[in-house]
Length: 134
Image 1 (cartoon, rainbow, N blue to C red):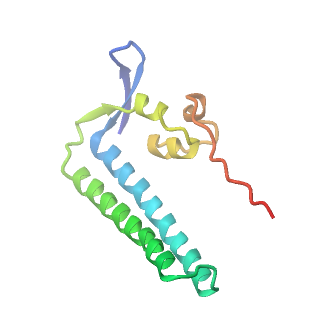
Image 2 (cartoon, rainbow, N blue to C red):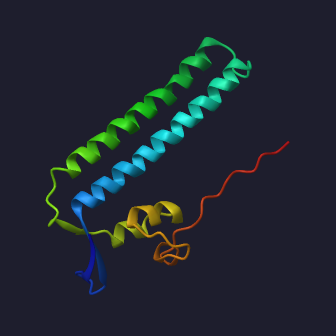
């Protein structure tokens, strides 16, 4: 549940229940884990195609699997502790959201679903893909 109040600086605080914050973080980490799994599939196809040579490269690529498993574990932990936190515990997430530079991540963490969001007004930018050169 999201509410507003004045914080210590006299600004509007965005008060969110701690269980909701932890659950949202858990789901966000799960999205990252899924992205790493997708990368593993892509790299697996490149390995089969012979794009990576040598056992050292394959060994180093296993770090993606460890990263995925770690992200999954952190996600499970966050969702698990969200069930232990009391719904009446609330925290001001507005300052933390200002530090998130990717607009879509900021929107997901704040629960905003619209295209024009406060997150963009707070300085969050868009993801910039790298350009492939041929």
